[in-house]
Amino acid sequence: MHHGAADLITNTDQGLLATLLPFVFDPEAGPHGALLGHVARNNDQWRIAARGESLVIVRGADAYISPGWYQSKREHGRVVPTWNYVTAHVYGNLIVHDDPVWVENLVRRLTAKHEAARAEPWSVDDAPEKFVAGQLRAIVGVELAITRIEAKAKLSQNRPEADVAAVIEGLRERGDEQAAQDVAEANRERLTG
Image (cartoon, one colour):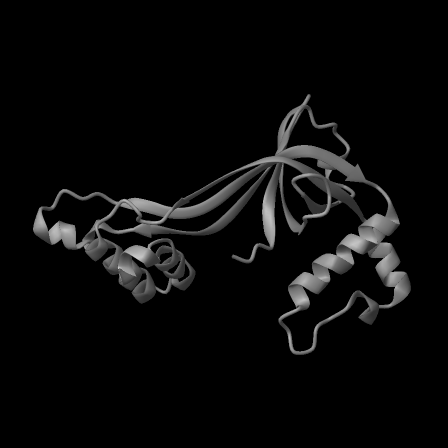
């Protein structure tokens, strides 16, 4: 799964703060790796000290699952709607990087990650140097040094094979291709025998 942005949540003396941020994973940063991102300089979240652990919520595809898709509905009717999803709660200690060199390196990594699939990828060097320097002054780097990860995927694993196949078909018909792929992948062994 390809993640671009996730929710950073910090507990502060002023209460909980949350911001949706672009992140890149750095497996070399510490024993469990780190999530690296940036916030706007005018976003108070980087200025207000986090108390204890911080949390990043990474979401995958999610989708409403209609009981009308289930073969079980036709057999016995004992079915209800549900929601399928993939999520990870990434906990760690938040480190602020108000350092232009660190921030520029991060921006280059994020750009390379998201431009990699393009036939003609844009580069930070494509913009005028003074413009880039001004943009870099407007952001501050953040690093979540990961201490633990709690991941969960609810992808119709509890349903009979016929219901799972029907969920995949229903999701595809509705245009939820990523959710359909996630259900198919999570249930592949069951569906292929």
